[in-house]
Length: 513
Image (cartoon, rainbow, N blue to C red):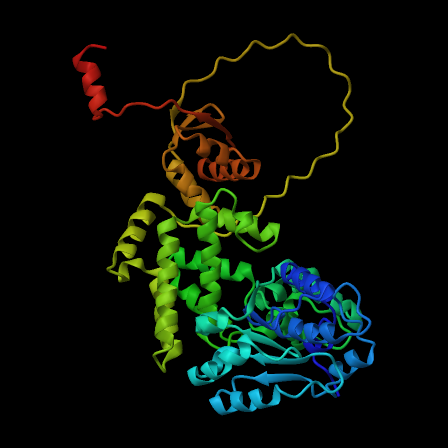
């Protein structure tokens, strides 16, 4: 019979447990020194190793040949616990045994000594499901159990455990596993099973696991296709998610007010997602990363993604106002809340997506702030433009040696004139996929001098941004198309000037300064 991967590769010793070194070290030291507590409380989110560590603890305290606090898993005691043939290690599901009568039956069994091992261990899973009467019946037994009894309580909701129970147990908090830990374990399991797992696929599985190793192994089991390699595309198809670049493109469509494009995206995404709630959650996660990029100087420490994806998010966050990002997040969160209260989920999802595109539909403060931010930012954003390929270099032709000619006299630079093709040039930039440059051209002062197109700005960041080789090449190409002849773009830093209606300018004139 096939055994699930999360069961087949469940750790058998404390050394195999991933990501809980602070707990493993303490338990091994207690067992090695013989300082074993009568009651333990393991708490943490799902799939972090609570039940696994409880079973390892049950074998370790009864092992006759263990070293360093780890069970040997070879002695008769360990083998009987592993194959569940012993009656001295009892695992109880508190979700189905919640009443005070179940606890009374448990108390009646405690007086009997273990038959084949040193300690009788009771593992009570999901202990928070016990009723108040059951907790009260367990209090005295949990405080002073017989010397041959050890309790191990496990829970995912520590806030539901009464304080009287907490004070009688040694509490250990299991932390969520990082994506790197889960991805490494998934790669190890794939190697043991004899199939290839692409690093990008392992990274996506680890993020989808959300800190739970069991969830990651279950997803890997679903994506497994015999001995064939598991690719990123297969994980996206099986898990029913969209790639990060597709989600960021949806954000661009919302900012550009392209409701038709966003609805087309939703129509194609419905084939992947079981419902719009998960799609909204994924969009919110991308917007969260964009928000972190826009407000943090070091977003790498706060965002879990590869370097290429991080750079794309940083670039997009610089084109989106922070107020707009937060408005989109609130709109999606409101949509998720309303989805749980309606039967027309697809209709509500489309209404929510249209609201993302049209901030004027909202009358709250966030919508007003987003409208102001759009006016201040100006323009639309597009996907990162591809770098224009360099023109092919022509092979130098052999020419006969020319007679030396006298050095030409230096040409006198012509006077600057206003740029007459500035507006057509900006329209060409927008039509050719370089609309993301328009926001940086708002305060540019264009002028023409001979074959030079001089662009001056008081903002040094604009000069540096537009001076990048690929952006400068795009400007020169648009200028050549708008003017009908080639121009060489020159970027200069303009000195700050006072406006005619500036109060400081009037003060200078009045005092003849």
